[in-house]
Amino acid sequence: MSACPEIVIDNLDPEKYASLLTAAQAQGIQLSGDAGTTHYQGMNFTWSYDTATNTLRMQCTEKPIFVPCHMIEQKIRQLIA
Image 1: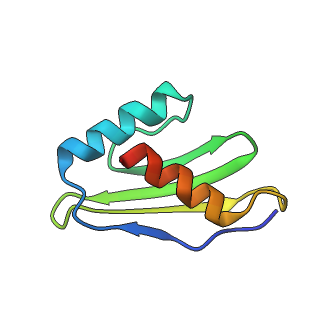
Image 2: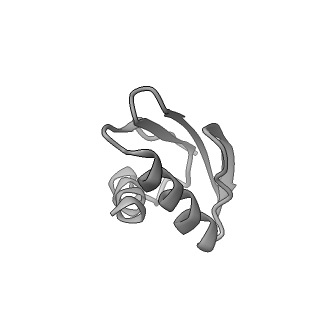
């Protein structure tokens, strides 16, 4: 198992963040609240959302070696779009 670099998304307004939570949950990813950890398909994630700065920080802390970090980041950014 290995970790990926932290993903920082600035200027994510509260409505977009709420939309991200809904989209993630629709795909079976258990995200709720402004911070936490979750497990999804053999991967562990941590996240925190700062409402004062509208900044989301998310990191895949454990993943299978065959899953590239850039693919994980791409999927996260697609959920936000």
